[in-house]
Length: 173
Image 1 (cartoon, rainbow, N blue to C red):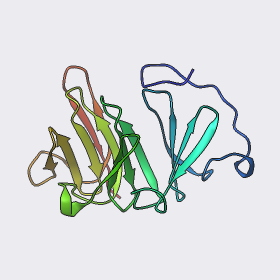
Image 2: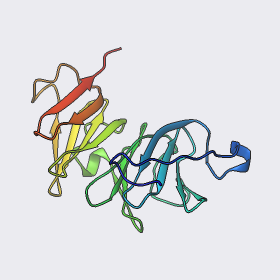
Image 3: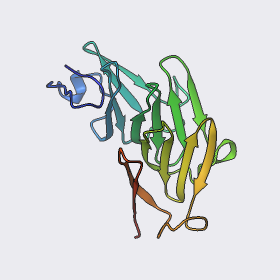
């Protein structure tokens, strides 16, 4: 049975792309929400949702998703879906409405979002090509090499431990 992030899984076989409702067969991200919907971020065609044996696709034409290139997906403790894009920032979806975050209206260090993780305190950590933006209590905080001990600004993975420790992976080309 599909469901949230606590070890439950989905076993399914999907039809070839031309017969399914999946927007694209190049997949960058997968995420189950707490209600059991499977969200699929594609390389160029937006976001697909699989629920109750049916598909729905969200993209630039029917949502506030600013780019078809979805890089990462996360849900927070309120089941808000966080959607990262390759070069157009971040979007959230609560099931009925969308909110978009750009550098101009948040502390996202970059519009290139590589990873998103929710911490135990429900803060949301967004790893970008230029550092980390943390959304905590309706406020953005930015962490970069300039104001922390980060060795590099390109963040490729973030993991939180139950004890409050945070692990951050960086990348250099």
